[in-house]
Length: 189
DNA sequence: CTTAGGATCGCCT
DNA sequence: GGCGATCCTAAGC
Image 1 (cartoon, chains in turn green, blue, yellow):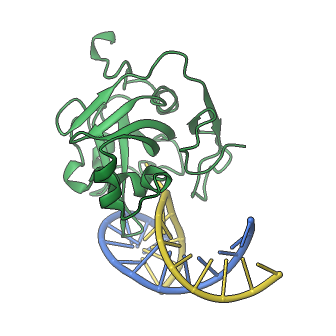
Image 2 (tube, chains in turn red, green, orange):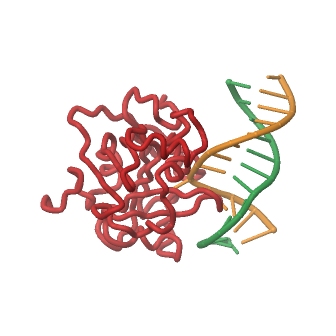
């Protein structure tokens, strides 16, 4: 339904399409953030996805309405931010893996404890720390404060490859990146 | 340059 | 009890 676009994206589309379209989109949390340069798609029928085994206390946001956040704790330490997609109840999402830092640089440097701007948002756990994303935003609508999304510019060139840090479905090329960007967590081959 | 280990939470078998 | 959609530090080659 074209009346439901957010940042020019139909979040009812399959996760691999949403993941691709999110490249270049600007995401801010309380005015701090930047351009998405790296994403990964996870689907309900995907052995590598948290949604694969159905809803749990941790992943229930993935089964909620699309264009909402799914935030989970990784390795008991870091937070990771996903954008929920597909129709409600399906259980699919896109992991936001890296940003080009644009707005609120000093805030991000302070939160991350570094002056090296590449270390601010070059990984899913890093960018959540830089943007102040925690479980408090799990299930939160992306069109509502503190979130603020802006469309990608025209002419974005997207590259893809295998996802990172998983042991199942390792050959599925559902990692997407902005071509030539130096802000991705790891280079694309 | 690559590899290894620790931190530490929640779901799984 | 094991193992992650991670990150950091230290040590080895």
